[in-house]
Structures are given as C-alpha cells and as structure tokens.
Amino acid sequence: MEEADESQFWPSLAAETGYLPSPLLEALHLESRELTAILVASLKTARRSK
Image (cartoon, rainbow, N blue to C red; front, side, top):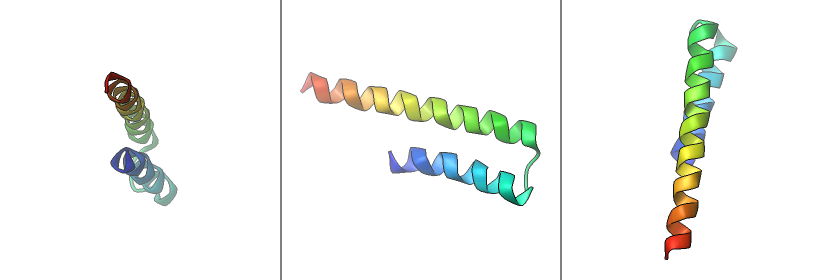
C-alpha cells in the first residue's frame, strides 16, 4: 500500500512544481486513486478468504 500512496504523491509534487501540464497530472492522479482503491479491495478480499 505504501507504493500506492507514493503513486499519488509524485503527481502532486509535479503539479506543485509546474513540471507537467495540468491535464496530464489530473489523469495520473485519477489513475493512482483507482489503483489504490483496487489494491485496498484486493487486500480486504484476501484477508476475508483466510
């Protein structure tokens, strides 16, 4: 999960520094949130299956 959190951090940092254009950053941020949600759901399912 730490990696998923980091995937949200880097686009935010790029936005603050003006390194990447805003539309690209919005897409990256959305994708990172979706990936985090998928990972969280997978972990919950795996824990219930034990």
